[in-house]
Image 1 (cartoon, rainbow over the protein chains, first blue to last red):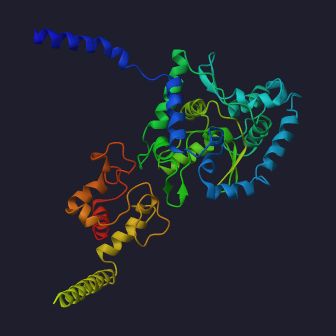
Image 2 (image 1 turned 180 degrees about the horizontal axis):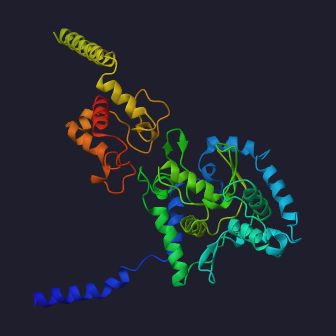
Length: 279
Length: 122
């Protein structure tokens, strides 16, 4: 009797396993991710996570607020506007590629494109517009691409980050690729994005406080004091990878596009507020 | 009698402190001693970079990701355990943020020995 009972329990447990072992859905991930930070930093309002480290560090926030009075990205926005209005050699311009209201553009990216089975980024479409019209693409990480991106971001401030949740198998494959990148350890120092920006967010690495990953993509491109110039999100990714002594991937590589997609989904519900100024 | 005892105790501990300080001073003054080299390697950003995460007496702007390196002899009575921890902290905690210094070739065995000797002296 006892044996049959045990066997029945075992069989029952096995039959239940497929259900308990299923992966968390992206919606569950978002809830857990955002909940982790809101629980960890009780004094920080949800909407404030778009301000990176300044959302949790009052000391450096003061300095940053002062910097924002004469924003170092202002010139980039102006240059970007000029480029936006300047026609290509064939007479067409960015306006012909990005149709409709400029302020609606930023919030359309990143997104999954079914036809090409890839993640489309704002920077990707800026350069696609150029090459489609017979122009040379901009360099990917800084300079003119960051200028145009800054102009579009500035016009699109205040729109909600609302990346469509992945549901098809192909969308989920991109999502999982980005999620895996975020949590996987890499480089000679063997560190994951999450090691610093989730588990140790708010802690000091040497004299620097680690920013929370929630809201990371909201404020790009950024003027970074350390760079002394503007840079795209993928420029920052490449710097982070170098910091852990990993060989960086190329800007707009599948790896970084997937990471951008995952990070934007984790930040769903926050507001776009690029371009930003950072240390 | 009790007073005398207390005096004796104070004198004894003072002697102990002075001799300990004298000892460590003589070791450090040894120029290029293992302890000194270990400290240099521990503080070097390209080598141990221990200060990135650990507070160490005498180090500026230490991080607070990991525990302060104090009372190390009490925490690691056997220096071998400390060496193993520096070499590959993943053995005790697979998800640790501490880099696997030995297997990833960040530090050589010789460098780890020197750093361990220094850290053990803290």
